[in-house]
Length: 281
Image 1 (cartoon, rainbow, N blue to C red):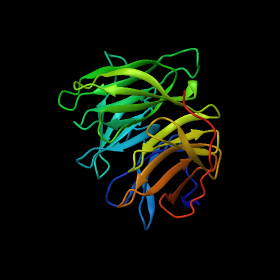
Image 2: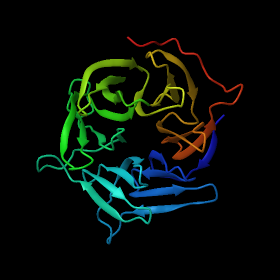
Image 3: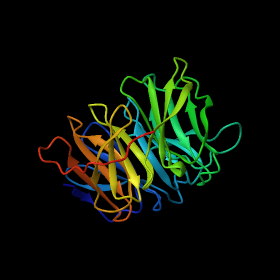
Image 4: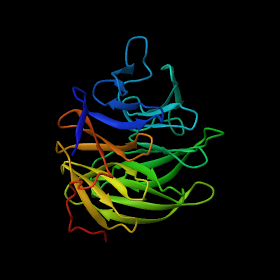
């Protein structure tokens, strides 16, 4: 089943694979990002008197050039971090106002960066946003709004659709992506009523894996929105998922009850999966 990679973290989130053998993980409550390789792990960047650009990071992702991007929810910004740990504030806000609490982020096929920015955690208050940062101009625009705590975000392999977790409504939304990068055709992709859909990622077969915070489960969702099955996690608070290693068949998860990172191969015969009776609407 799951193999523990590292523990002793501080509310780990946002795992991001650099494609070169290392996994990067936010420590949301600790103010630092951990770099994990096959041989060791160490603090990559952290908040300090001399480094005030980072405070509390969440979602992480890499661009095609090897820069690490981080949702900095403590300061309401998006960070761009070089291989040697130099931090640049990539975007500080929208129309002169800092972002609320950037949560997760993903690039489209053209290099434009999208990120979720939730606010209230209340199914009756839909004030969560998805923003888009233009790859060339860095102009920030609204891609989607009216979301009850926008959380994990992931693009389909062909880039034609984007999926956004609406945590306070316990569901994942699906949008079509227009040629100009705007979203349309919003619909409910799947509902997960026994926990909060948090981080999400696609496997190489097009199945969506969703960390369902509070349920002790990673749900595996078919491309048509039906729940295929689930994997039971070591703790009840899985927060995010990432596929890594050379063949992208190793699933890494961050888990916040045990404050650890775990991994498992998803192509192993006899993998312990549990059938789920729940279906999308």
